[in-house]
Amino acid sequence: MVQQRLRLNFQRWPWAALAAASCILGVTIPGARAQTMQDALINHYCTQAMNADFAKAGKSPPAGMVAYTCNCVIQQVNARATIDQAKAICQQQATAKFLTP
Image (tube, rainbow, N blue to C red; front, side, top):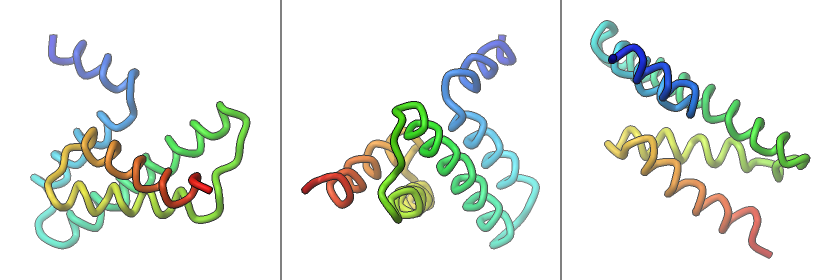
């Protein structure tokens, strides 16, 4: 049942894999090294997801938008926001900064 649930979450949203990996890394790698690895994973999956979303829409992201948004997500998660909360906050901020005339 748990495997089936995890599989569904991973298929629906790659952030679920990120959250699971973050929990595992936090338990097995102590201190700053775990934080660095977690930040790298968040950045990797966030960048992939944003680029895929823009490609699917047939557009290119504005210069700096992907890095800005993913850094925001990292900061939010490090401040104890959930992935969903971080995504919502950062999408709103990036939209206001990059897509508002």
